[in-house]
Image (cartoon, rainbow, N blue to C red):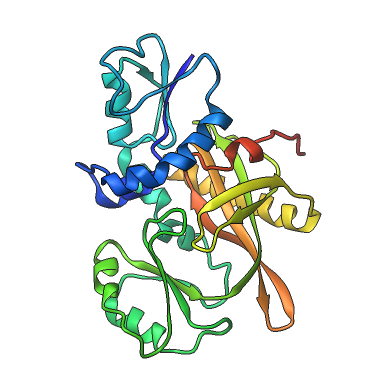
Length: 282
């Protein structure tokens, strides 16, 4: 039996560091998605832990979290659950930051992770190789939060704050045609089990709506290669547990191209239960 904490705001805690406490607006915004996630991962015999869970009421349960952040672990232990093995907070912060994904190599022409304010401003003032304007992303983000599309000459006063948080991902703001994801589970010894290719439907802000099984041999091959690369990098960084990568097809002039690794999520995701249908691969 498992005791789950569905801390969908984990990326906010990763950004804020120790001592994080969610705002009521964040908690309210998570409720709908938490209900959907609970239906997918929480079994009838499991329990869900939150701030209102009585002390010790989850004794005898294995404590599991959407992402094992310090706040999530503290709540599970307060409830009496025996927390499953998990990576350190430092490892979680490193591998979920956008810089980690960019360090594995650029997979979208013109994209970069910038920690220098002057350099970031200069890039935004330049002409992107494709798309309209630049999409600027905070070091940590989820559900489309922490992103802005800007063009040369526009107000970028927010940039210093985002740089001070650890840097920003700057990439061409392209027209996305279709979004994909692939999920896996990484063991402590570095071996991984991979799920199936799924398409993702998101709303206008980038928040997840649904995931469905996809059939595209070409896209799947490209993403399996990226999953292998990411799995090795995560293991080298000290991470183990669930992980996923996002990808998308985009329009470049008259062609549709694949961006095979737009983001790494070293945690569970909303689409994990759909995507992690284990398949045999040579």
